[in-house]
Image (cartoon, rainbow, N blue to C red; front, side, top):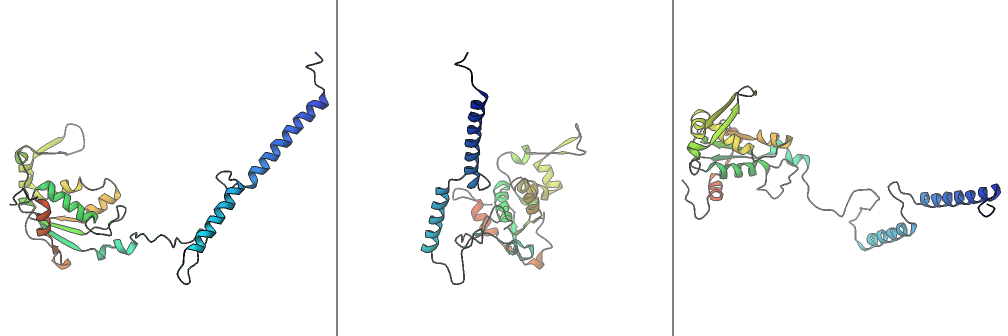
Length: 234
């Protein structure tokens, strides 16, 4: 019993030593605490030396200084600005859809709307153009889609009110909706996609009310991209 016994003074001294050690360790860690993790002081001094070496090795333009958390003067990558996406500066293009395949035409129209055909394209910015599609009533499809392709819609949005319509019937009734539905399915499914869709103007005939915008006719370019060397255009 005497071997396992410990005096009150010895127990207090032992616990006090542990508390002192823990307090010293905590103070040492908090001395180099940066807000996210405990970083050794040697690593901080090493990083400072590396930064000083880089600043001395890189030549800066006259009047430019490197400041902590300042402008990144070393990153020269292009990123579009607000004026680059201004709708008043966007060009207009017109495409004659007569005899063109619906799917291939829609992919190119979606590319023009997103701006994927320009070198300054950025997926997060609206770099596209306004696209006017005329003669939508003369667009064609391959195989038996003219009779078999179906378009479904809900009149009231309630179960049991779904209506089906073939490609042939919809083309005779509202030909513009065929191109609009195909292009809309190829745009992003978010707010940006809804914004891009407003830049699409589809007309069933050859007439359109956008002559004042002086649209550029890119039908020849679209036909060249729509049909490969083994296909015959209409």
